[in-house]
Each structure stands twice: as structure tokens, then as C-alpha cells.
Length: 119
Image 1: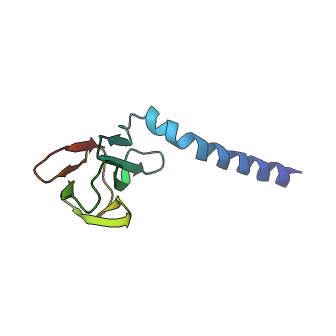
Image 2: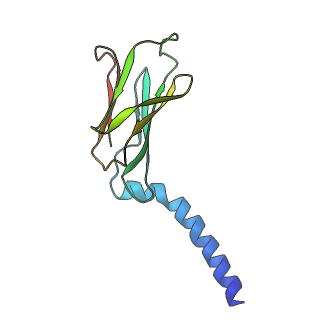
Image 3: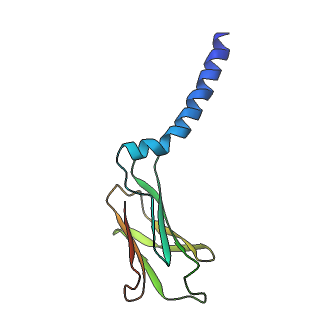
């Protein structure tokens, strides 16, 4: 009986941990995970129980011109570029994790429709 109780307790603890993580990030004061305008959406994924950013993404909205309008994405010093993951959707590459306070931006060339997300 004690082993069965331990197994059930472990499962319950695992479920609670998975469901508590996002509200816990809000409770510790993380900034918003996404921001958007008419053309772009910037979003981040954070480390478990932390505000540290582990992934950054940029997605073009339906208003983004087809055929490849010239746009750019920039971020912290160790930013290394973008990888296209689908139509109008990009994943940002960098070296290492980013602590809170990093700033990521996207715009058309000439800073038109500039959008920034401070993590």
C-alpha cells in the first residue's frame, strides 16, 4: 500500500508542476510573452519557473506582403540570425539563454511598422 500511495502522489505532483508553471512565471513578474502589430508577432518561450528566455519567434501576419517584403529582426549581441520554419514564420537563433531584459525587434527596412518585445 505505501508504494501505491507514493506512486499516486508522484503523479499528482507532476501534474501540479506542469499546470503551475505559467502562472508561477506571472507571479514572479515576467513580462508578457508576446506582442503584435498589423504585420508581425514576436513571441518568447521561457525556462520553467523562470523569466529567462529559451526561444524567440517571429511570425508574419496575413497583412505581411506575399513575395517577400524586405524586413529585419534584431536582438541582443549574441543574436545569430533567423531560420524559416514555415510560410511567414521564423525562429530566431542565438547563442545561450537570455536573462530578462533582452530586447527583440522586427520591422520593415527603414523601421516602418517597428515592433519590439522586451523580455
